[in-house]
Image (cartoon, rainbow, N blue to C red; front, side):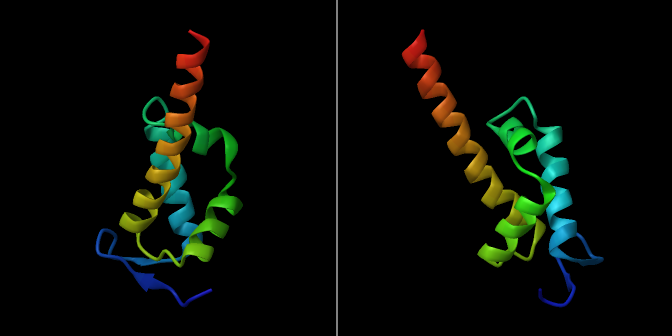
Length: 86
């Protein structure tokens, strides 16, 4: 893990576990929109943290953008299934 770094959107030192918590907070706040519920329901903080490490994501903006893409993919898949059913 890299040493603590400062982000532009959060001027205190931030670890990747802090970023994982920020992602989860963002997902909980947007639970009803765009697939964020799948992040809340299907991922643990440890899994979010592992993804941040693997992708070498160090800022809040990068983390939210990365997981927004993941949430969006979940949402697209859900919509496709719903369209087939109905």
